[in-house]
Picture 1 (cartoon, helix red, strand yellow):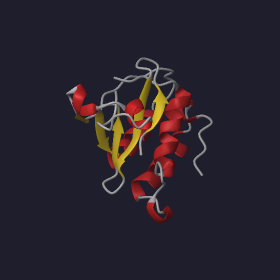
Picture 2 (cartoon, rainbow, N blue to C red; picture 1 turned 90 degrees about the vertical axis):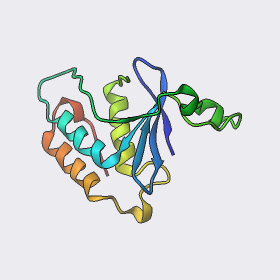
Picture 3 (cartoon, one colour; picture 1 turned 45 degrees about the horizontal axis):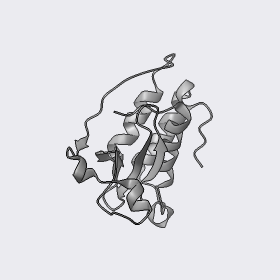
Picture 4 (tube, one colour; picture 1 turned 45 degrees about the vertical axis):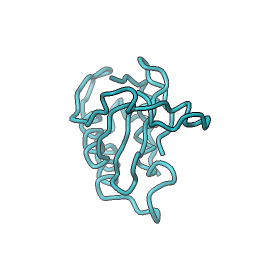
Length: 139
């Protein structure tokens, strides 16, 4: 289930597992697979000495706003048409996104078993040990 996270440029956006059986992640109106997200996060963390960095990833898009829906209306039980959504995140929130994936979102990884690519993300982030991951604790 996607949760609400604060972006620097778009306000609150939905991020999370859209379909845990396929490890499909949603970010606003974009979606991508967790096994592509995890190594991309490690690549970001491996960039040393950069306090700011921009990159692009291959993602799938739900281009029509009507197809994306309204997260707040769904949360309040008013309208169940989907979700909401180029996103900038404060480092603290970015780390919350990483932790969300590490935990398996909600309701968590099935039987508490993380896929290998998630474990690889953790070890890659620990090895990178740069400014981006400072303070990140994945238990």
